Image 1: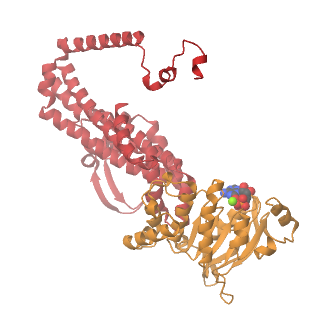
Image 2: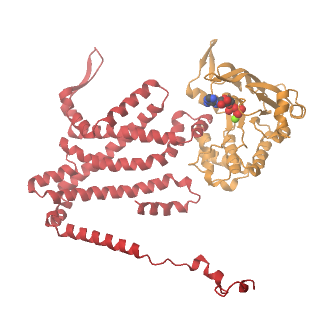
Image 3: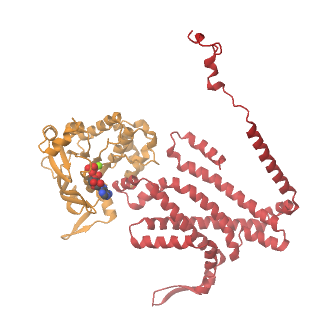
Length: 259
Length: 308
Ligand SMILES: Nc1ncnc2c1ncn2[C@@H]1O[C@H](COP(=O)(O)OP(=O)(O)O)[C@@H](O)[C@H]1O
Ligand SMILES: [Mg+2]
């Protein structure tokens, strides 16, 4: 893995607060992610992991603090010492360097696999159709689904759908990939193929933030493991430390469930 | 053999008799009787219709392709197409307004739907036709300022425009609700995914949401289109020469009321039948990604029609 120590963080989250009405979900999250780093977020359900991911690409607006990706503050721009909310189009533009993979795959069911993959490159990034198709075929090969280009999502297994979803996210050539429990909706025997694909991406130096309950993936593929509970980061560090020798009692009790 | 120890009634081939491939359906007397009764009623009914002089079938045949009737037919079809297209477009806009977060847009959309669904179409048509008594002139002007352009209402609101505006706005109110229902039926994750991929709202709607919503929008829209064909007959009250108005104009002259009405009825039935056919094909088209293999779609389209 290529962690460039001198580089500026690709993602900077500072004192991020988020509440739904009166329910405080994130209570001051600080997190830096370096280019090429693979960060796995662990934590019990309801601890705010998904919400944090969704704040990073502004699917949810935060109420305090800031998030910066690739040098740009997400959702806002600085105009002469004054912070202004970006327009919907401005936000859409910022999202174009962030790929996202969802728990429920969310493939477009009315489009074939190939159409799913080229939709954003052609329609949003202005790539030529020919280039996009060529790139899509390469990506399909990379996730091991070359022969499924013309299938509809419904004709694929869950594991195949999720691999297509990963190829679709990669097709926009993202600087950052967000994974929200990508294997949680899969039958146990299909989890492996998706994790293998993700492990490949990690090896190739893609910057990834992965929310998952797959401890083995965290142990093998993560550069850093972050443990969240109750809307705060409780503990973080190298996987062998956080998973192998957790310091905080909440981390210990969470991990004990996976033994 | 194990079987041979059981009983003589179960011969060697017992297993073969139990194979369902050898089964046949017993004769069902009740069913045959029912068919006979129904056939008798239908034939009797057909006999009455064919032999009742009042129906005047020769007259029907003579006027079926009469130029007046045909031009009325064109007017009905043209009105339907134009009013339906306008209705769908305006309905889409109203549906999107109604679903937006903007209070003003939402309020306007609700008011629009409330008014146009809440009043009879016939009343709306007469109302539009008589606009000139309310507003003798239509003008574009700056409030409290100069008038930029002005038209005599009677020259703008002809029976034609009154009919189009009346039918289209009424249709828009119904279509707005149908389209809104369709848009809501699409999984929330789809809009979110489109958003996460940096699509603008408009593109997400056009490429991702609407195509999926079509599956639930098409069937009720088919019904609306068929209702619309029939609703165009209402415009005969504002002297618009549609299909009904044309046959009326003929029977006012010849007094062959029933045969001429039959001409209209047959044409309406013919059109709605064609529309039914088109609807099943469109439904099969938008359902194609549902099916596990593509070949099935065609078969289903054909059998779906037979069920109508
Ligand atoms: N859109 C929302 N509206 C209201 N509450 C929400 C919303 N999204 C998440 N929550 C709440 O925020 C909390 C954290 O949710 P989430 O981030 O999904 O947790 P996790 O992904 O760690 O399981 C939960 O209590 C959840 O009910
Ligand atoms: Mg979650």
